[in-house]
Image 1: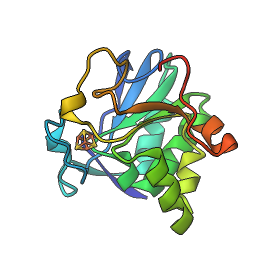
Image 2 (image 1 turned 90 degrees about the vertical axis):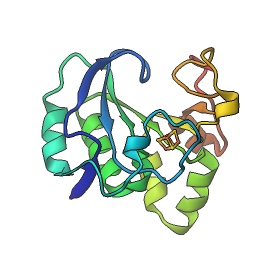
Image 3 (image 1 turned 180 degrees about the horizontal axis):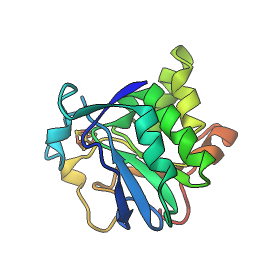
Length: 171
Ligand code: SF4
């Protein structure tokens, strides 16, 4: 399927976009429009590059020595089907999946009650860093996040217990 990415490249060997050494895939498009967002060039849904997810999956399968893949943007949750497709591929390659989103976990659960794909995508996410960037809560003290309202959520545990479970390692 087609999806829009900020760049066709996968950024490898990042140590700032989640746990361990990771690769990052940047989705294009975001409607949250957080004040002082670091990546406003990724907001426009018509910008970036259109690519088939099959092509991106080929690049994922070629990754070596990476703990996992982080999906960022933009907001990957605006292209849910493509995110499901790619996240499944990451798991098939025995890597873990982190996703950064401007939606909160609770908003995604609510969306999932109307449209199952939002629940399906959560099932393919190991760690969700959720919520918009709030400039007044900007903090360098919170690991892997821009502002202190954002949470690092253990998604499998949260789905199992039906409430938000923070990932102990980082909160
Ligand atoms: S959700 Fe992320 S990409 Fe979107 S406006 Fe907020 S900080 Fe920027």
